Image 1 (spheres, one colour):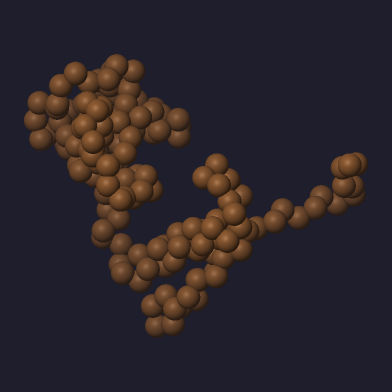
Image 2: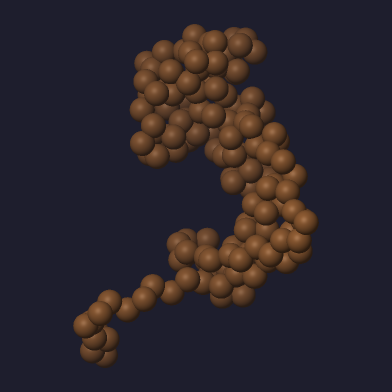
Length: 163
């Protein structure tokens, strides 16, 4: 589980500006300035958010659940909030639960295929090889998923490097 500073840093590293984060909060009806977000990324918090509204504002700004914000603040205070959920689960946007069940099953199938391909291929957590997943469906229900690492085609005219 990342700290609140790490959650903000990930958004920032992904190209979302502090101002854009603040605009997300404002669009959801909350007051949060880009300076407050910047400061929270660079200076770890020394106290819990003063209100539930502030937690909701950060959740809107970072496009994560209120639960993710509470846990991220707890991690900022070195509280053990470990659980079995993955970083992927934490980073999913708030509306994820509203996606219909068929699409949820298809997305879960792609994730399962990626995990299976990584385990079968002996990949490590630092591996970034793309995974191609084929999701086979019948009546909107995922029946099986097959995955294989995607190999980049050789460039025309290129020769293997000498050994």
